[in-house]
Length: 265
Image (cartoon, rainbow, N blue to C red):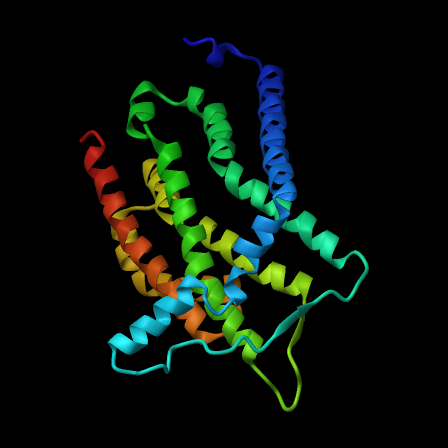
């Protein structure tokens, strides 16, 4: 029996405390780094989707021209402006972006700490089957973040920012803008973990590929609800989020099948 398994309950709590402290330090280090990179973070990342030369808008324009739609998909104007309505508005936004950004860049380390705490309780065979899990979890997370940032966020900003009711100018508070950008990208990164969740649920026997196939129609409804929650209330954003989630659901069925085949008969 390993030394880890001989640890008492209080020793496990002490180890968990140290891992949480190291995780907090990692987030803090990332947040401080981003805090001092203010110009890059805001000009080149956060505010980039409201610039006409943003890469996603150029993709849309090229796509429209390729489809023979001339300039119909080209973004010719950013019709909203961002304002700060309170004395601490910009500073608060700076702190929020730095903190959330710290979580994003420290995510692989945070998961590694969690996994290192759980791993000693697994059998040797179980450890082998999940080798490299930190890499795959991190890869899915960053794929989701990039998808949310380059696809969902610009579409949502353009739709909501240019939406008008009567003769009302769009002047968006900086906090509202930040929450849209940050929550969309972070939430998309998290929901891209679906295959990993399905893998572990399959390993412990809570779900199976047959179960996932049987309730595929119900899953589509759930995916649409999740997409509606994590995106602003425009149909196109919800559809764009739903498509990769449905693909991930089908990938999850394949994963569940492989888990079932690997079980001893």
